[in-house]
Length: 269
Image (cartoon, rainbow, N blue to C red; front, side):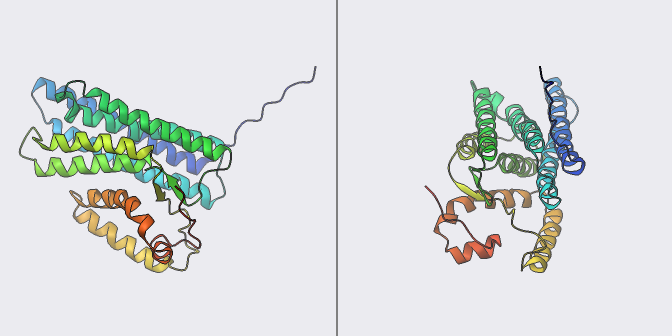
């Protein structure tokens, strides 16, 4: 009987290190949410500060998620292991952590509110599974995401929550804002598993014709965001969310200008 050999998947250090950072941020965010919940139940301490820390960890996970894929593509180190590892990290950082955050701040006040959190988690997991299936058979869009990406969905949830906590900084409750977050969770659940297309900006690199303008623009945007961290992240993530609705109505030329693609694929229904 011939001896069977196993071919172990390739594991590239730098991209997977970024993915590990993503997973760390997700785990840290979950821990901060649980700590904040305990303080909230005991009626002491500052639970809002814990929730703030959780939000920053989720946003930090978004940065790590952006870096791991870009580093893998730049070094030609894309692999099946990296794709699967990234999805497992994403479901923690962008599925479990945001769902738990909104549950503790909002959904626990509603009868069966936990089901909304589960719906968000379910749709996010299904979206990641769909992406992996398409990638495995070579059918994933190179420049487009099908459905709203789960990291961006987590960015919307966490940044809007950050904005609300800032507006209600002198209160232990967020008042009627909870209805907005409830509706937003349901809406994002639908958007993640929808067929709306979003640009991945994978074609944007230093070889593009607009490298310098893009670099200057991004630097200015990051600086302005740092100075207005309470509300600018919400503007950025909501802007990306709305772009998917307006994108089909833009001319091919305008889309190429905005996305810096050499060739913009046609929209499919």
